[in-house]
Structure formats: structure tokens, C-alpha cells
Length: 189
Image (cartoon, rainbow, N blue to C red):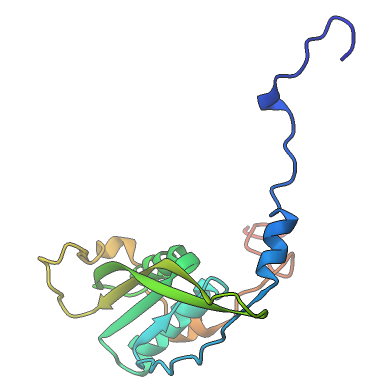
């Protein structure tokens, strides 16, 4: 420390990296995750499975196809883990594109068990149990059970901006430039 300055209290000193110790790292190198065969989950026609990587506009487009082309009256949005917020966003956008949608939201959690087998003799199998949140949002043009604790009535129609199917299928511009919106010179009289 320079003259006249006090030493930095230990709570403000920079900590070492939070990386696992070499002993822990070398311990996990002695195991290999057991790859389980994926269960062939049958996805219903009226189900939209939201992932953290998917785009909300793609989910809204799928909803448009279900309600308009396939003439479905009900759809289900499902998500787990990091995708929950995107599922809620998608449901809110869909409710603002189609009039009179009743909603029921159900939250649950799923237990995921990962197994690790030893690569060396004398070590036991290791299992890791994780609980992942999952959500199912049902949107229906028909009335749903209003006594359900996850029920939400349709939005006020003044908050809904219905979009023609052709408009919804048009791609939106991405990136910078390439199209107006604002009034420039020579526009607007």
C-alpha cells in the first residue's frame, strides 16, 4: 500500500477464480454420462413446444396456422426450464392477435435423472437428480374452466390487433435500414 492509504479489507479483495479445483475436475473425468435413448414423445397437432432458442414470431406464426388454416379452437404451449419466459411472451403476443382467447396456465416440475458410469474399476455409478420447472399454457376460443386457479379471461377486444393471415406470414425486415416508417423529405405533404 502507498503511504497514507489503508490496506484493502479482505471482503473487497478479488477472489480467485470460481473454477472447480483440479481434484474435483479430475474426479469427474473418471465418469462418463450415460446417454439414454430419447423417449419418442408424440407431439399433438395443436401443441407448440417452446425452446429457449426458438423465436417468438415463429410460435405466433404456428398459432396463426393452427387457428386459421387448421381451424383449431384450442392450442397448447409447453415449455421447460429456460424457455418458460419465452412461452409466456408467446402466449401474450398470441392473445393480442386473436380475439376472445381464454387461458389456463399450469406450472409443474419435472424430475430429470442423469446417470454417470465410472471409467475406472472400483468406482460406483453416480446419479444426479435435477428438478426442472415446466409450464403448460392452454389458449382456447371456447370457454374454459373459470374456477381453475390458472384461468385468465379473454383480453378486452380494444387490446387485440387482429392481423390477416397473409400479413402474419410476411417476413419482417431484419437489421438496419431498408425501409421507411418515418417521414423523410418529400413525404407527407
